[in-house]
Image (cartoon, rainbow, N blue to C red; front, side, top):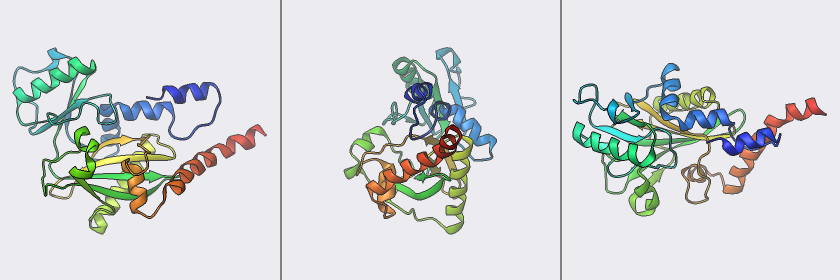
Length: 255
């Protein structure tokens, strides 16, 4: 959430990765979606539910199927088997459960049926390492989503395809969206950006991860690198080199 980075800045200690402002913006999913939409990047329609009183007495204004998740969490917290809902009563139960459990607003967004894509970005200036698709092993399932339960059992539940099987035009569009998001959200050195691709081939921005998981052989970000022929030491070196390149002007000024 940017707390450690804020402390490092107070102590004037250089560090790798994005600053506190970027981390706070990306953790606030509705705010990140607003910035994406203002830049012309499609994102699923959504509503923010701050408390039980904000729940309407009727389903008007909601689009189903919908996806329900905490507004200010990362690492798939709060995303599980009950996150996808198909009607108002089901949505209401899930919203109340998350409000009670996480004590924060709940995001209810349109569920985009289709493919799950994630994009790895590294460097200064930023470059896209690759676009990876997360594919359920149980076969084609437009209602599949990458929940925390599946992530914990990913070897049995999913397979990864990188590069994703995309047309040249669609790949270029996703790369352009990703680099624009990286810039407008204020990311530095590394990021992973998630999209859903609907059956018509329209990519929708879901969320950005300015501090992606880096566990070798497990995290999606190092998996993208590995599929693209980048070994783990080289990946970490690229991130560190990016951070160093950002510090050089400051070092020259202080010399």
